[in-house]
Length: 414
Image (cartoon, helix red, strand yellow):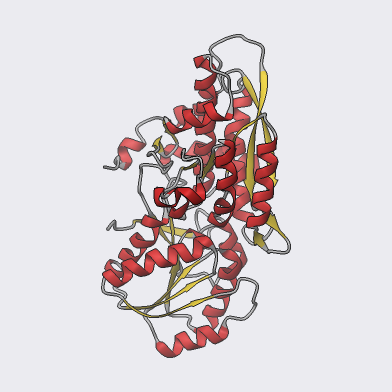
């Protein structure tokens, strides 16, 4: 059962802003030591705008903790690694694997924050598992990575290694299909994906639930993210005249799709998952191309919560841009890591990656989004999916990720 929004927000803004400070307070006066935490994100390419917001969210928590003495007396040194490449034009699974090997090779690294994308996660997890190095993702949602049926591929050592502060596409895709059927009254649809692990997975889960909900799927195509022209596919879709298009994928193909769809099928309902939510899609596609698009995030909407107003203000002043919801789940992910390090240190055990992993597994921590706890697979227990629509608000800058998307509420659960 989920906590109510009121329950999740029952603590004050001052307490929220003090979370990292509390985690950074050591119970002893022992001489401070240093340990390392990785931050691995695609800071190059089409998704760099959102990845940067995520990085800032994580760094805000770590900086706060270090400013108060570290976590359990340990100063946190951050190793930031870029998993995007110019060649890929977005996240690159091969680069993500290379970065993970660098982290694993450094015995001082006790945890990682990231990745942003599930394609990175699939490349990283076997390496992380072999090293017993836990990661926590604020935005990666493909369910395969934590599915016990696929443990042999993604966690060969058997222990949960991939933790999330968002839910998975086992909920995000189907819940959006429910929204299309129940709220938008869609009767027919055409489905697209971008061939990536995230895009294919969320499109698959959306399609299965759409068909169960009585939506007729008129066809499905795959977009090559490196191609420039999708007009042939869009012209075919226009001739079929579905009520809507659903796109599973991220910004590299999504931005081009939005611009070309605006020219060819401007009045058709269009939507996707969190791959079309946030700054990379908003600034890359721009208005009027993104106007009217529906999107989801795999968690509760937080940036407009009055209880978080001071946090949002602090973030905006510190980094010069507004946070999105995944900046908040990144902050929460860093809090989980800091809390685990603190609990291990205070227990008297050595602060090793295995002990930190064990502590992360038993997390029960009050964060910005509420209490974060994980199931045996590393998935967060909360299953909220939130729905938005892009609607240009001339009172704010066009790249304001808070005010250029209207929150429509939680998606109907299956």
